[in-house]
Amino acid sequence: MSLIDALGQQHVAAPQARIVSLVPSITELLCDLGLAGRIVGRTGFCIHPAETVQAIPKIGGTKDVNLDKIRQLAPTHLVVNIDENEKPTVNALAEFVPHIVVTHPNKPYDNVALARLMGGIFCAEAQAEAWCAAFEQEYAELRAAQGDAQATRPQTMLYCIWQDPWMSVSRDTYIANMLAEIGWQVPDLGEVRYPRFAWTPELLAGIDGVLLSSEPYRFTEAHCDALERQIGKPVLLVDGEMMSWYGSRSLQGLRYLRQLAQR
Image (tube, rainbow, N blue to C red; front, side, top):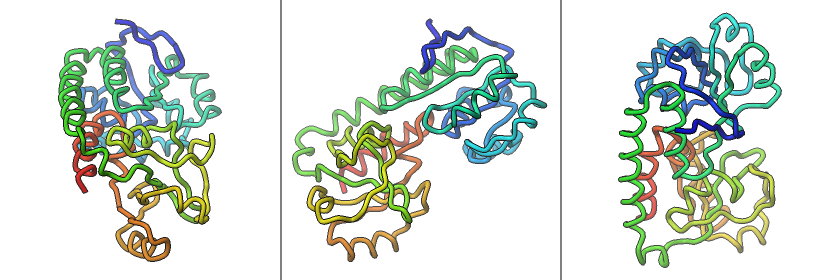
């Protein structure tokens, strides 16, 4: 199997790999593929699976990593993501980490290739194929559940990830492509992947409702109630992990989408 990452870099199987993961959702996937024992470092945001990751040393955040700590851990492989990790940081780590595995899943079905890439590089092919089979089943069930129901659901939903300033997601993001699976789209706010916006009359006229994400900003039901009174549009709190975490959590994410479509 060809092991090519998001930058087109070819990788080979590494049965003795020492892995540092700077991507919380991929840390979880690696653990679920039985690779926790090969992860020598993870970010403080790598919180799943909770009992397993407690034993793995923290090396900072997704963007503010501790280079000296990572150097001392002597990893052979660094797993990063184009959206979550900054290029200057990755370049600095590339000076002493031999292999940089770059990921960029942008649609739900990209999780199949992601699992196979991780399984192939780190010699967990059987576990990866079992995971992919489970994903394929969930994905087929999501597609089958759509049918004629799409015509009755809101079509344009503003997905909010932050306030002060208010920020949303562009149509070229994993979150937007998750919503597209149930026939919802986000408004066109330009080419910036995570744009700032204002509650203008023009914006409100072009949306059917608002989704407030539980992460990275901790929106709550109280925020939903206040905003709904302010803008006069339906506002729904959604689980940010279910909508934005690829890898292992995407299985639950597909089930969550089916439930969201029924609200």
